Image (tube, rainbow, N blue to C red; front, side, top):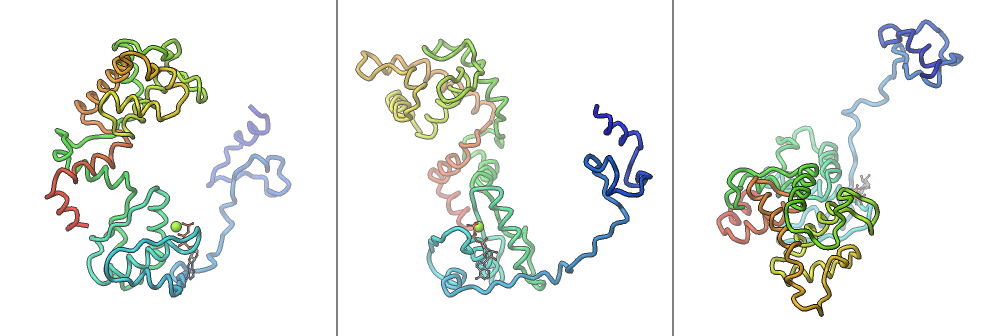
Length: 298
Ligand SMILES: Nc1ncnc2c1ncn2[C@@H]1O[C@H](COP(=O)(O)OP(=O)(O)OP(=O)(O)O)[C@@H](O)[C@H]1O
Ligand SMILES: [Mg+2]
């Protein structure tokens, strides 16, 4: 260990027992010492309550905040006030009625935090609702919650859980080991995860599963076309040419392993991250009552 660090630690410096060297600026341990002087007081410059934000919407922003009927699609450049306008519209609607019927949905957790952050800035002291009265979620978070609450309509026997990446790896390793081999997959170094062109059997098969699922391919022909369309060189090497006799039968082992993995998910009430949105859409498509309910509740 660095001798200077040993020196520093040996002094047993803590918040309550600061070191006895009285001049930090000249201390030879200064570069590595993280100690911050507890006697140093930082005076707050402003009181939080005084820190109100003035947002005076432009004419275009006002139109978005106030429109009353139908739907609106707003296209605006980065930093032009989209989130501020959205939040002000949410507050306007909440003041008129039921904040719990307002759903704000976004792609990222960061987006959710920004909405909550701005809500806390723009809310008035006399507003009779709290930030958690609103439904603010990511697409995936909202759909996951829906699938868990309506698991029967989504064909699960209990509320499903998200499969962890480590479990997915283990399950695929087992399936690929037990099922007939897929010609061309790298079983010698199954976990290898290097670059685009030299993936081992497991990471490459994960990509295959993702492509099939994304394309919602179910027949052998759909699956073959989805994999060809992926233009992934390593995957293309696994496929027989379309001119080959019985080319669809030759991708049987790929389909077999894919189905085995889907069966595992179903039997264990598991979902993948990417499944959540599709599961919810499928349940809504198939179930009118659920569709009406979600429209009513949100
Ligand atoms: N009419 C306005 N009056 C005062 N400040 C405004 C107005 N419109 C936007 N701003 C300010 O501009 C900044 C960017 O706003 P905001 O974060 O809402 O934009 P955005 O379009 O959501 O940005 P991004 O594209 O990064 O998500 C914020 O500081 C916001 O307070
Ligand atoms: Mg924004």
